[in-house]
Image 1 (cartoon, rainbow, N blue to C red):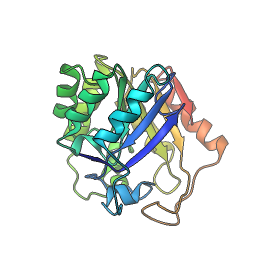
Image 2 (image 1 turned 90 degrees about the vertical axis):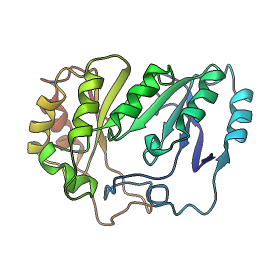
Image 3 (image 1 turned 90 degrees about the horizontal axis):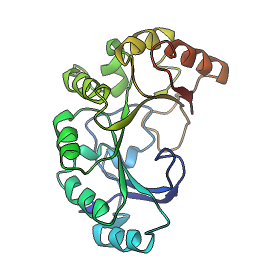
Image 4 (image 1 turned 30 degrees about the vertical axis):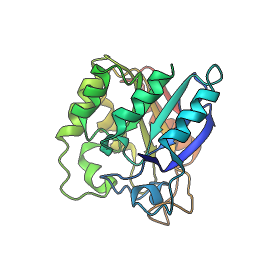
Length: 228
């Protein structure tokens, strides 16, 4: 197994923890605003790290780091993900998995195996604009809805989050997202930031005032709502 991207220290990716972030390549979505285009499209020329190198890094960081965030791409696509998480848990670290929610059964299996402590699931948009927002015409939303419902049961600690892009999100988006995730523990609105690696050029962010307005729309449904 190879690791396609690595961040040795993060204070943001794993809430209230000091961690590192592992990025796995490949994704079943093609969100135009994705800033990990090389990972998503498999264009990275060489792996950032092997599993053995990660083991060596984590062994040396025991007592300094709390957890490991596994992101992508879509990490649940990787059939060797359980092997990676077993390595991480075996060294005493907490595990956070970022997911787009497409593979609810795989997520549940990881939880049942004791391999995941925290889940961050992207809510890409309102159901009406989901397919457009993820770049997959005719998308079947059933797995996404199943993942949302399972996380709302609270069996594992979690957050929902939406990267907000002017060209895809408006007040109507959040009028529909709110009832969908009502009762969630926490919800983060992430301001889109343009990078050279974004899949589609020309996208832009809303201003801070508008973002706070979207957050206010969500607070009747989710008590803990923040703008990142």
